Amino acid sequence: PDPPEARMAIMAAPVGRSSRHFALLACAVPFCVKLTAAQLLHSIQRGPRTMCKGARCMEEAHTPSPRTHHVSSPKQVAKWWQAVNDTRARLGRSSAADLIFMGDSITESYLGTSLGQPWKRAVGCPEVFADALAGQGQGRRALVAALAGDQTQHLLWRLEHGELAAQHLASGAPINLNIGTNNLGKGHTPAETAQGVSSVLQWLLTHTTSPILVNALLPRGGVPKSVIARYCPPTCDALPTLPSPYARDGHLRGRELTYTLTVLPETNALVQRSVTNLAQVHGGRLRFVDCGTAFLERGQGVVNRTVMPDKLHPNAQGHAILLRCLLPHLLDAALTRHR
Image (cartoon, rainbow, N blue to C red; front, side, top):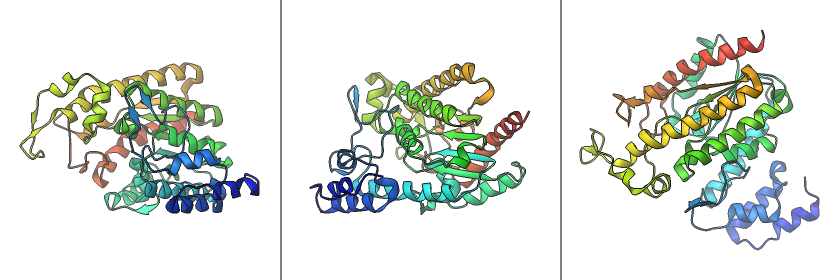
C-alpha cells in the first residue's frame, strides 16, 4: 500500500464531487490504494467513452489496465472497483479448487451476478453450473474469477494485482479462459484482441502450473457500426442481408453477418495460432476449443436467440450447452495433469 501521504494526495486531487467519491473509495479499500493519482484520475474522469479511434486505442488489449472512462461511465467504473475488491476478498477466502473459470460476464453468469450484483439475464445459470459440476464434472469444485464487461487488459490488471491468491496459483487446477468478446465489442481489431488473449495466457503460464483451456469467442450480435468500421473497408457492410424473424423489417443487416462471418473467425484463428505457438513451449498445458456452432441458427451466421436472447450472453439453456462442450476438455486436462 502507498504511504499515508500518498493516499492523502489522491484524496485531495481536484476531480469534482462525484470523482472525490471515487477517490475516497480507492483510499478506503486496501486493494485500490496502489493506484497513483494519475491512474485514478484517468480511470474516473468524465469524457467520451470511445476506446478506439482510427489506429489508436486508449486502452491496449495487451497492456494491463484498470477500467477507465474510455470504456465505462463513472458509475460503472465505481461498480467495477467495488467488484474487483469483493472478488479478490472472496477468492482469498476460498480454498484451492479443482477447476478455475476466468473471464467476463459470460463466465460471471455462473455466479448469477454482473459485477457482483444479482442479474436477471443470469437467472438459472448458477443451478445449471452446479448440476453440470455434480454430474458431468464428477463432483469437482469450481472457482469463478470473472467480471462483467472485462476485456483482456482488465483481466491482466486483476491478475497482476493479486486476484488469484497463493493457494490458487499453486493448485495446478485446470483453468477455463473465456475472454476477448468485449475487446471486439469496444473496437479492438482481431489482431489486437488475439494479442491481448496471448498476454493473459503468458501471465498464467508463467505464474501457475495449471493446464489452460482457451475458449474460442462465441458468436454475438449488436456490434456498433463505428466498431465494425475499424475492422474492414465499408464493403463489409455490403454483405447480403439474411431473412430473419428477429429483425424488425424481416431482414438482418450486414453488421451481424460482418462479425460472425469475418471478424469472429479471424479472431478465433489468430487466438488458436497463438495457443499452438505457446503450446510448443509449454507442452500439453494449452488447449483450444470452439463451442460456438451451437449458438448459431441454422449455421447461417445468425445468433440463435433461443439460447442467447440478447445476442451476447447465453441463458441457462445456452450455458448447459456450453458446459457440455467445455467440461470433457477440462476433465481430460485434469487427468493429464496427474499422469
